[in-house]
Image (cartoon, rainbow over all chains, first blue to last red):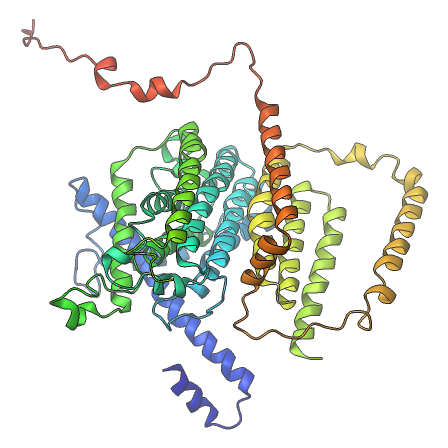
Length: 362
Length: 201
């Protein structure tokens, strides 16, 4: 498809090649970011609906589209418009520059990471060798937004929140990194596309089974990294009001929200790619279904798996009470890190001995 | 000037400005943030040298972890800069002398005679499928295996030592007993009593 556009642009004759490449990359970025922002907007709606039904409420159902009240589907649009027109209040004691830069620092890494996320064997903006490392590096930068927001607000609750979140995110990054090392070990590659390619051959070939402890730890650490319930001590509505974004209003506040939800979707996509076979079909190699469209790998499978993980996020939030702070630290350092180290040894042995059915084809 | 050179000079300029700002800005938090910017631009320069693994690792380790903890500490300090500026004029000649000497030594050590293009030719561009990570790994785990392992053990000792320093029992401190907390069942805390409804008087 992009080749066709490139040919069409070259047919003008007066566009330089560099500009054409730039335009194509920009087009790809728009094609990625626009659906992502749509997904973020409707994830907030979905979250309120799902938690509503879990708590035997209805959730938002008033705002419709063009006068039709379709289960409140207009709610995210109304929210967006409302936030855009709200006044941006800057506290008088705040450090103005950093106060306004903090949401940007939260948002920029959350979007930049998506450059290396593949949605199919060819559908990726930047197919780099060390894409998993790039993901890990950029997600670890996102914490600056929270810390700076807490500090620049010059207010007590945001500052407490910044402290909590700095310690929590650095701690869980280690467990998460170890879990990813297991995946790298199993796939023998740092490239996300090749990691998916290593899981070919149906649901039992995916890495969730040989790497089960790492899979569970990865997802729980992901929930902690994105500051979501039950690890949301950085926001902790009942303790410190809203944590780092107490002093924010209007669009800067919305940007924090966008970054948080974009990160949630990212963790879900990564879990699907690394442990659940990405775009591969679960019915690959099944006798009867093997010939139908169900066995074909496509982006639909990836989106379905991602949605499943996103639902888990919402389910956790509706189910678990918030962790106490020292319990979070204990879980991260004394439970997750030892388990991941032990399981890394197990994975190493499995890979070296070429244990079927996962690692017998080297 | 080729596009690559423009990119290089841009990041080099930002790097030098950021590094200068680290030691000149008044606020410690701003200094730490300029250091983060310096790390980022260094990573960009390393990317230009095709050292993508090192570049990404620099961002991951220094920006993502070390500087976060650094900021954590710096933000909690309440530094009053005024006493530190006392005697600035008095020590200025000595400081200037040391600075000039350092620059001279640096120029002599890493100047053009030793590291110029005639000494080290610009490396050939690798093709896109050469994996920097794999090459680095092969070198580290074959040729440099012992130095690598020894460095790892030294770091481990440092970690253990740092943790051991914090292990001092202070009298009067209350600790959580996690085993007891985990073992608690609802029957230990809550007693449900069956009784007849009382008549309202």
